[in-house]
Image (cartoon, rainbow, N blue to C red; front, top):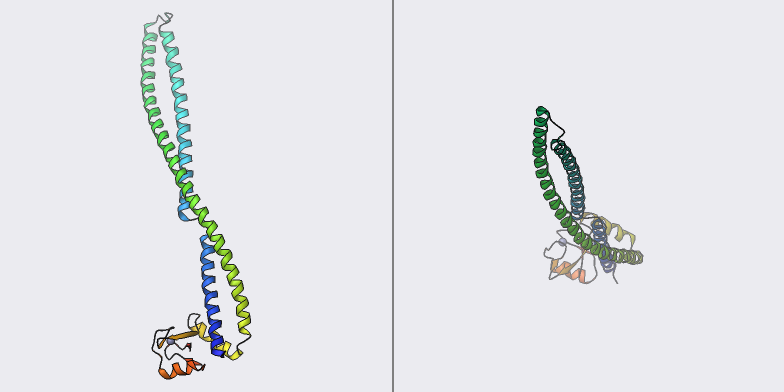
Length: 231
Ligand SMILES: [Zn+2]
């Protein structure tokens, strides 16, 4: 096998290593919680906090209502006890009971509103839980697939590195130096095939003479991209 052909085989190994490493990077980056998942978790946290806040509020309002009811009851008991004779005190009691009644009515409106808000908060919490569950399940499934892919990629890169080492031993050092220099300039690709009289590196036509030389195993370069060409 000519040195150029050996170089082409090395190029194939290096190209695959480059691709696999790139994919490995993507796979590793993908193993993080997605924005959607984080947002869903945040939504649930907010929903739980809202629900607790409305529960506390309803409880406080109910306590306030109970205290008003007690106040009204004792005022009414005193008013109808027959013990109060003073007309001024009777009038005060009467107006106090009326005032308590107005406060009570306002409080009952507030309780009704709190109950509606509480119901909304419960609905939202349920929806947030369900959305998180679906996203979490999808994410876990994707994670399992990514883990498998990550292992496969790591094994493949390891095997390729071994193949690369073997291949390096078959190529003269000056060839390797040149190969590395072209790869650096040409996006990692130093050796390309001629296909239909075209350089597959840059799509430019290759002269018949160069193609003939390449076919004979001679080292020829693309006039345009400078890569080494093989047939
Ligand atoms: Zn070219």
